[in-house]
Length: 363
Image 1 (tube, one colour):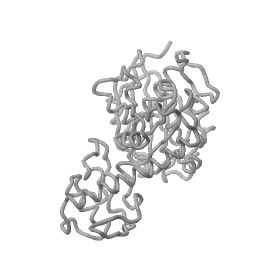
Image 2 (cartoon, one colour):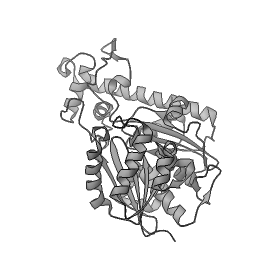
Image 3 (cartoon, helix red, strand yellow):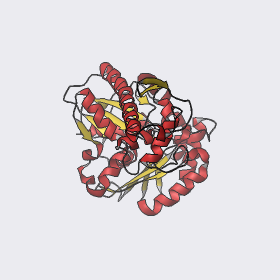
Image 4 (cartoon, one colour):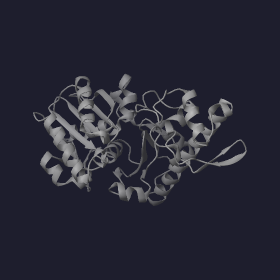
């Protein structure tokens, strides 16, 4: 029988995300907290301290991670071992399982021994849930820092890359997001007042400033300090963006800065679209196959769907039982929800294993 509740954890380098599924498999609660792990393990401890009272306790905890890559750790293997140890100390009385993508779920000691399979596979969990619900689709999970693009065809996940290094090459991992990405990584030069202006290679502004000025940044998407530690207002974002081209915001009307932000947002979309088209050339899916949109930047994923001439489907709608107030957070925290869903389904014996060895829905 499935456990009475399952909690899924996604330990990132910048955020901690958690989702609780009840005995019937409904999403009860979802939480996302800032966790600047590069500053030290105290950040994770503090985030867990804040998350546990909200998310509650459960007999089964399923964990996925990308935080092993932060420069706090000398290697990713060391990072996996450390994060496994932290979760083990925190939830030692619970049943802990660590997601290993094609390796299924592993116990703590197994996860440390197979660190390369546990590291940065949260995208696979989300894609497996999509594959169980939608036989053909492109998953586009656009977060605060990165974009994951995953093709699902004939009910199976079809990745060309299996780790960050190979996924960067294949275009399945695009290092751009809607909040933390430095503007200097979005373009090298921009049009402004009839001229082409090189951008300064300085961390003066981020994608959050861009999308705040376009009016599309969702509430709660930008939880870390601004580049200058200042306010998160349109005026402050315009000031930070102006610095990128060596100017003060007062040197041009606010609409000029909004126009520049729209140009940068469009360029970011083109970068993601180019990667998506490359994937779909390699793994073609029918024109009726949707783009499943996830992450705090899924408004940009919906734009991607339109650019590709496809319909968009919100990740949360794949779990109709998760409706209501939690629906937005379900899509924001797709890997945490997905890893809980996979662990619960696997524990109940309701899944079969596909050729990749990952638990899959019989439907």
